[in-house]
Image (cartoon, rainbow, N blue to C red):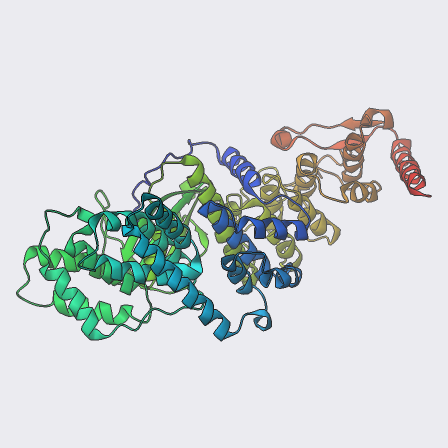
Length: 604
C-alpha cells in the first residue's frame, strides 16, 4: 500500500490546469523573463554590487543571493572573486555592502577582528542614539529616528544587535507606548533580516539559565494591561523575547529544555499551558513538505518530527520520524511510500497521474531555520507578481541542487525523473543535460517507451524533453551528444532519430553561438530521419534546410523538399530531403562563398 503526504491548498492564485507540454513551455518562458540577462560577467557583477545599495529589500536580497551563487559556482568562482576583492574594501561603498562582499572573497581579504569590533561598537552606539530619539520632543527627530532604524533593520550586520537593543527597550518600565509602537515594524523587519541571513561577525549576548527562567516567569504570570495594545501586552513582550532567544542556536537548546520542564508541571492552567505549548512547538525539530506542479509551488505541509499530523479529509496521518539535510524517513502518509525520501531536492510525485508534480522536503531542525523558512516561503502574499518571483528564484535554486545530486549519482534517469526535468529551471536542466548525456550510457526502455515517435531509448526521450525547454543550452547539449554518438540508433519499431528532430526544433526558437557552423558541418550526413522510410528525409538535408532558412534563403532553391511525418507535427516537422543530388553540393558551395565573403569584409 502506498502511503505519503496530504497537502492543503496553498492560499494563492494557481495556474490553470493545462497540458503538460504547454505547462512546461509556460514555465520555461517565465523563467527566461526573470533570468539574469546574458551580459558580460564583469558587467553583471558590477550591476549586482550596485543593487546591494538599492532602497528595496527584495532587490538587495536577490542581488546578494545571485552574487553568492556566482562566487561559489566552479565556472565563475575565480573570476567573480577577483572582481569582488577590490570592491570589498572600496571606501566609497556602504560598510554593509562591503561586509557582504567580504564574506564572498578569500579569507586573506577580510577585515581584522579589531576592525570589525570597532565598527560593530560604532553601529551599536548609533542604534542606541536612534532609540533615544524615539521619545524626542521634536517630531522631526522622532520620524528621522524611525527612518534610520528601519534602514538599519534591513542590514544583516546590524539586525542582530538591533533586535537585542529593541528587546531591552521594550521591557523598560519608563518607555512610552508611542515610542514602542514605532518599533513594531522595525522589530519585524530586523527579525526577518536576522533569521534569513547568516549573522556576520556578531554573536548574541550570553544568556544564562536564570535569565531564561525569569522570562518564562513573566510569560506564564503576565496579566493583561488594558492600556496597552496586543503587541505590547506583557505576555507578548515575554513571548517575543523567548522567540528571540530561540533564534540563537547556542541558546535555543536550553530554552527548549526549560519550556519542556514547565509544560511537564501539573499545576498549569489551560491558558498558561496553551502559551507554553505555542512557543514550545516553535522550538521543536520540524520539516516542511512542499508540493510543486508545473514549475510552481502550490502547497506546503508543516510537520514536527515524530508527531503525526492528519489534516481534515486525509485518510491517514503524515508522520516522519527522522529528517536531516540529505534524507527524511516517512512512517505514514497519503502519497509517499514509507521509507527514505531525499531532502533539499525535487523528486517526482510517485503517481503516474501526477506527471507534472514534484515534492520538495525541507529540513527545519532549529527554531531559527523554521522562522527563516516562514519568510522564505510566505503562506500568502498580496502580490501575485512577488509570489511568482519567489517561485522562479526558488525553483532555480532547488533545481541546481537537484541536478547536482543527479550528476553525482552517474546513473541513467528513469522515466519519471526525466519527465520531472521538464518542470525544473530550463537553463539549469540544459546545462546538466550536456554532462549527463556525455557521461551516462544510453539504454533502451525495458517495457516500451513513453514516446511513440522516438527511438525507444532513455536519452532519446531526454532529448525530446530538452526540446520543450526553449533555451540555447538545450541545443548545445543535444549537439554534443550527437557529435559523440551518445544516442542509440532507431529501430524498426521506434524508427525516428528523435535527437535530430529535437535539436532542429529547438534551434529554430533558441539558437546557440556557433549553430550555423555546426549545421554546415552536418550537410554530408545521410542518415534517415525515419529508418522505415530512408529516402523520405535525412539529417544532412534537414540541417542544410535550417541553415538556409536562418540565412534568409529558400531551401527550394537548392532542391530541398520538406517531408512531413504525422508523429512529428508538434516538433515542427523539420525533416528535408534533396530531390537532386547536386543540391547538397550547391548548399556547401554557397556556404563556402558566404564564409569567404565574410572573411574578406573583416580584412584590412
